[in-house]
Length: 366
Image (cartoon, helix red, strand yellow):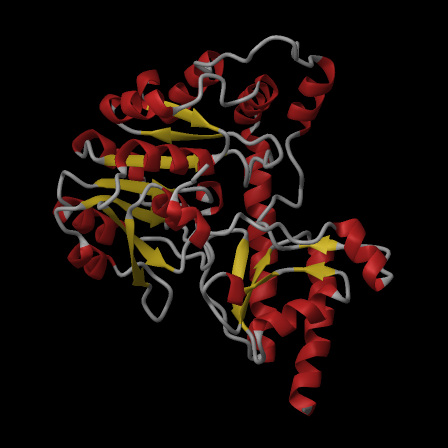
């Protein structure tokens, strides 16, 4: 049997070593994972109590329409229920958009660096990927992205805050962009880290949906809500887009337990506020530490910081790994000589800073 030719040029996602494997390899008692931008504070106690008390009937298929969650989320977002689509994390929404809109010979425009799955799924559908480098300070170069659009462009991917950098698109810049963007192009706006953004920097992208039928906004329960292991996210757009995407969506693509957990998580906004405040405090402390040792970093509106390193990011990654800390080397993210550090608890970050200071002093001595 012959598969798509493009698949021979792509590789499947490769997960890092498991914590137990790392502990055994380096003789460590504890591993601090700061690589996947997960919530170090877990998830809402209300979710935990609900799932322990009322496990769903696993022999019954889940609600394919996600009705109960749909109603509550629509009320919270103040949108019509028909404008929502759910997926197994935001990543499945991305995959569904590619299946819906892309054909061989079409193209997409994306910032670089950014979340790698935009490119991955676009290539699988036979589309050309036009990557536009971010500005020197890490922001989308929206003017150049507009210039890259042509009659074959089907999707423009925007990521705000952008992974792996953490910068957000300013409201004025986005407004100018979407007003100039051709109507035949879908603007896919990924807000996976929405709950971490300072309210002053939030551009309220949902307010643009009313006048722009070529816009879809994507969000997830994986990050601030702490439900990464359950895989559930959603998209908000006009009915026409949602109807088309639903054609390629699997009939039971989100599990009963994921739907129930997300529903309860939505009701506990105190947990989200606490997560935001703790993250904000930890981020400020870590930024101060980086300034004190002279390491540059990109401004971030997320739960991670991209740090420029005095030596190879891969070498820093290995140094930290051997001492029980897992971060993401920039070489794997399109940003050599950097590391992306997910922000952990106050205790975790204090320990990390101690190890980074040792590395910094060793680098100076050399």
